[in-house]
Image (cartoon, rainbow, N blue to C red):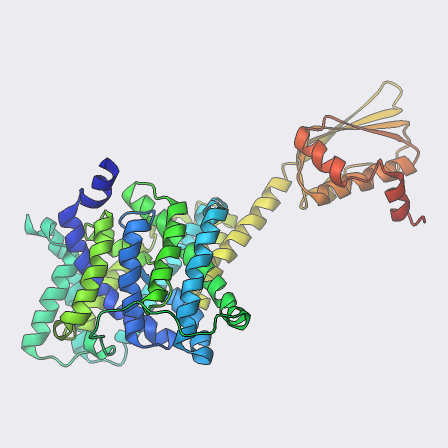
Length: 495
């Protein structure tokens, strides 16, 4: 009961007000993402309602907003174009099932492989993408739009300094109200939410996708569903990490992965498309005072009520007001300190961060950007740790016996260095390979050891390996062939 009270009812006023701001900001984005995917606006709006409400109950991160997203919409374009809406709904349900399965496999643990530089790059790339997404609303428009956007930004940043009331009402909500009233009474001809597309006038209903339940359907939708599941979880995990930092609290990534799956099943069953956590809306929620699950729940409820019952009011909201809010999100999301740290951080860290940004912005694919960052970070780490492997040698009194003492990690990137450490031309009676301070990680390391031992023995030396730890001994015993005459004969060309 204490946990329930803390997550749901510890911040009722803040969550209720933040939910309104989030709902208003969700509407044009949900419509825009529907247009990207090539479906009716109500598909994105119904998805945002379902996902926001369901995730508030089953998600692992209070205060985080999930809904229809651009990253997911981009993956649906070909599917919708070739097979239609019904197959999209079936894909959304399958996406949810895959995400639930992946949550129990432990996919959330893979976040430990995401370096801090990748997270910073992801955040900065997302900030840039959020800003770039506003440019269509700021190009080929009249001067009125620029004035309204500037006024909106002024209200957003200056309103909080007003005594008392500035701390009670979130400035993004005040911006929407003031600019809407101003445009309505002044009569400026600017683009509004109503120009984005037709809002639905009915509540969503449960429906099962009208597709054949056979293997052919599965062959069509599975590749899309798997891609959506991975991208959705990746974006949700990254957003969880960022909101954890902003609120100094800890989200449950296992519950989040499972919750995203349940929410997507609900979305597909109610005529919506697949979605995931939204970093922009989540930051709007946090900056507007939202902290608990109630903010996500109310954002979904407000969204549905607004689009179905208050469409006449929503349609007059100027897009400039929402653009100002999203610019504020972009500015607040970008890690400005990362620019200053470029001078002090290692070159490899900077390359990982900038690589993540460039690929993400260049492809508009958050998952591809993060995977690029993880790959670069892994390569740099492998290269760095390989330099920590070194060896020492010592002889007996008559120099007929030599001991090689290895220290460090032997794996694919250091195995060649390990092999080249031996002097095969030296005439010795016995060679001792001491690996008590070394660790063998993979097949490449074992192969290098085999090659060295076989060559030393071929040169006439007796070879002994000592000091293996349990893990090293296990991998050498399993894959090593230097003590297996039959395998050695095969390698040496015997029959």
